[in-house]
Image (cartoon, rainbow, N blue to C red):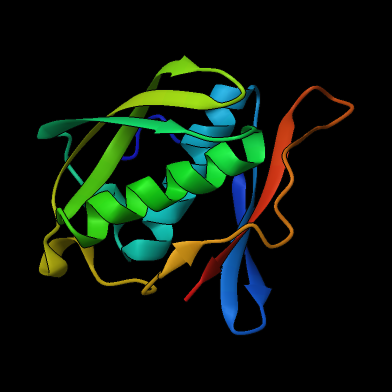
Length: 145
């Protein structure tokens, strides 16, 4: 489904790692699109994920950049440990150092969702959230794989 993703991200080649450049019309959409990009790395068929279950996610960080890394690592935790793959993300609260989101998705099913890249963690390497002259927000995220 991934119905609230805007496909405003681009996979980047990176030596021994993988990453993506992501954009959003506002900060909330930037975090949503980063989550969508991560799901597209973890699965080969993210469009097959159904919004059957809900999860509440809360993360805190020192600043926007730290918050992005913690957000993505929390999503990775829900995937790797809880076997939960999100299909939609709703940002309920967002500030420069905290984020609360509701995830909708389902238990991971290898046959239906496929197996993408095995991601170890989101990193701080080259990560910096900026606002572009056109008003959109942008960041680059590199993952340790």
